[in-house]
Amino acid sequence: MRLPHFLRLVTGQLPEDNPFGIVAEFDNPGALMHAAEAVRKAGYRAFDVHSPFPIHGMDEAMGVRRTILPFLVLGGGLTGCVGALAMQIWMMAYDYPLVISGKPLMSIPAYIPVTFELTILLSGFAAVGSMLFLNFLPMLYHPLFKHEAFRKATDNAFFLSIEARDKQFDVEGTRSLLESIGGRNITLLEP
Image (cartoon, rainbow, N blue to C red; front, side, top):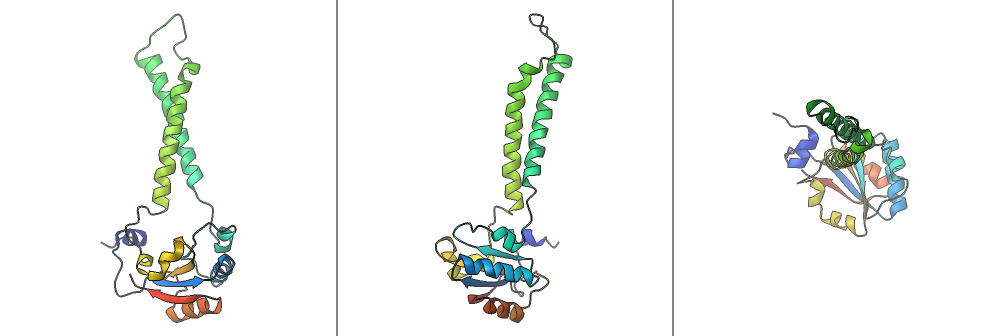
């Protein structure tokens, strides 16, 4: 059975005969921003930038769409809120009704603490779980890890990588594009 690309990437089961992609190093954040814009304008979609710190405006330069994470967290929170209220109303008013000091069976103010806690709990679980899933984590293997110079990406280097699964990818064409926009140490990545 053939796994989807992201599962093959996470588990390290990429085919050995095809390259994974190509990576180029850039001098500074401005050059990396210019490179991301040029690569996006050239029609590439399966590319990523790697920097030791966030670069303001990079998402717009790469054409990254907004994430669905807030909606997933909202769904988790609403599920917790409705679930807690339904659970308490069922238990206190229908399953085991108990009249205490003449108070009503469905006393919403008394249900607020449990409702709040379950809302926050399920929102947190949704945030962490969705973030891990959407970022393909934990990623046990990535071909960039074998690139010796890429170790500087967390310290003082700026990289742009283009994956071979992109429809525009051509080894020589992509290499010449990266050279024309100022890329250096351009390396073909093997899986």
